[in-house]
Length: 153
Image 1 (cartoon, rainbow, N blue to C red):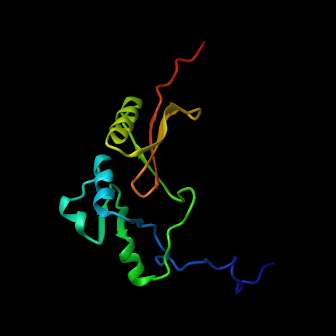
Image 2: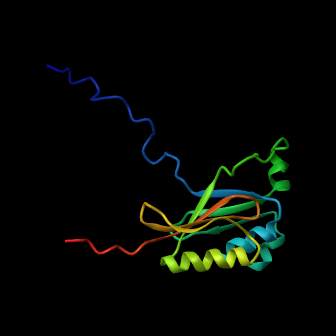
């Protein structure tokens, strides 16, 4: 028989309504104008007047925000900040409407002078996929579902 004064289990780790929520992706950039030009080509609505700002942010569909800060801005509150070396540690992914759009967007970015990391390919997980790098070396994936192959019956 259980005692009615005992709790039913361990307490929740957070108080309802007080859990943090994912709200913003922040990128540190060496050249604000070059970085924003790249993301405009991917369809983000960023005013041209932002190119000379030290901090820029924009809302994405669904409420998530993306922000760009110059190295000087970051070092204004974290003087020891240094960029990581080696492979990028963040990847952003942009959904395309169809496999042909993956190819078009990839070609547009490479033709505009951005680094194409992996040319478009049909991935085994059922997507047309390509990898590019933004001006600061961050990975940016482009993807779209491949058409379903007719099933053999």
